Structure formats: C-alpha cells, structure tokens
Image (tube, rainbow, N blue to C red; front, side, top):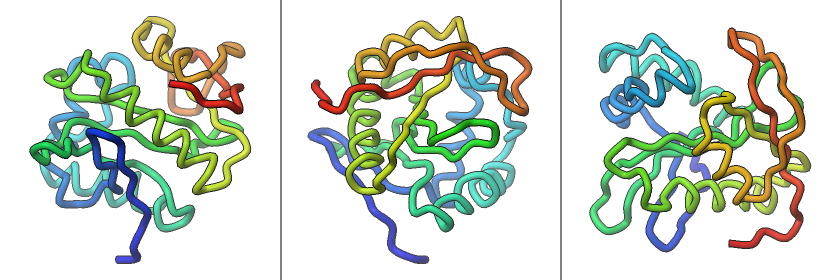
Length: 177
C-alpha cells in the first residue's frame, strides 16, 4: 500500500482507516448517534465493515491522498472515532466529517481531531474550500463546527439523504483554538 500522510495532535494519532479497523468501524457505524445523525450504512458484521472500507474509504484515499482517518489515543492506542475530508457527490468543495464512540464524547477529542484535519486540508492538501454538513437536530456538531470557524450558509439536499441538511462553510483564514 502506498504511504499516506498521518497526523498528530497532543493526544491523538490520525491515520488512514484500513481494513484492520473493521471491527472498530462496525461498532462506530452502529452507535445510536451514527444511526440517528448519519444514517444506517448497512454494516452489520465484520465482512460488511471490510467491504465498506474497501468501497467507501480506500478509493478516495487512493485517488486524492486523503479520506477517512481513524483516531487513536496516543496514551493507549484506543480507537476512539473517525475524522476526515470527504469528496461527496452533490457537494461543492470537500466535506469535513467526524464521529466518535460514546465512551470518548465530551472530552474534546472530536474538536482536536477536526481542527487538525481542517489544518491538514488547507496546508497539506491545498484545499481552497472546506464545507461541512449536519442534520438540523445535531446541535453538538453544529456547535463544534462553529467553534472551528465554520459558518452556516443554507439548507441543502444531498443525493442519498432523505432530509435537508445544514451546509456550513469554513470562513476563517486564521484558525484559533
């Protein structure tokens, strides 16, 4: 496999998701919040998770050099969540996305990973436009996006999603913590 960039923060290592992460991806994609806010991806066993990684994550990584990253806690190597830059059909620009297992919520990991991924998008990958989308009822994600410097633009429809989504654009050239 071609070597791809990995990223670090004070507490995290962000590395491209790989097939060895299948059991973790299976658990994450079936959490209550993933199902409620992102949707059922029909990943119900380890083989489904491997196919999801092969079909939904790896092709973009190979094509663009970035995709979905698994968040590992430096202290113990725990796989805690994902964060990434996604080239989505129906969206102009690249979409910043994140999700975390319930045991790690409320500890700043999603912000820390998203901040680093936003920085990577601008500095390492030379992206000119980074967006984010979220459901109207996902207030925690909306607050995190606003803390990162994203601004709400409008409601949009995206192919494959039944409900309208809130579109955010990254506006700040000066990223502050």
